[in-house]
Image 1 (spheres, rainbow, N blue to C red):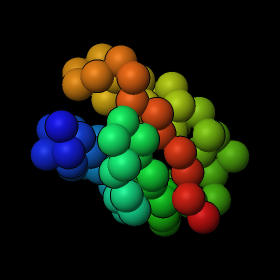
Image 2 (image 1 turned 90 degrees about the horizontal axis):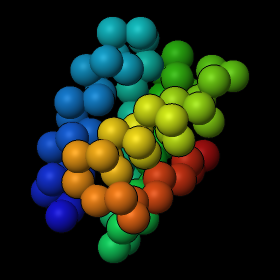
Image 3 (image 1 turned 45 degrees about the vertical axis):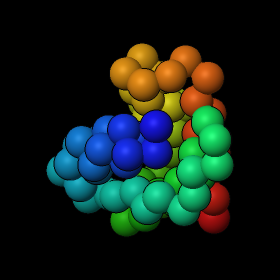
Length: 73
């Protein structure tokens, strides 16, 4: 599952980079994924929505409905 998550995150990174942001994978522990948002995304007031409604939703829909994404500072 880790490789599937990493692959999907690479797809998502392209979209974030187009807006001047990026993400860094900190850790995958089972179905818990820890990410750090950087660039424009790091200070964006909508970062929580990006994580939960964007990244987490995409991972759940394409890989496993039990995936939880958390932001790491």
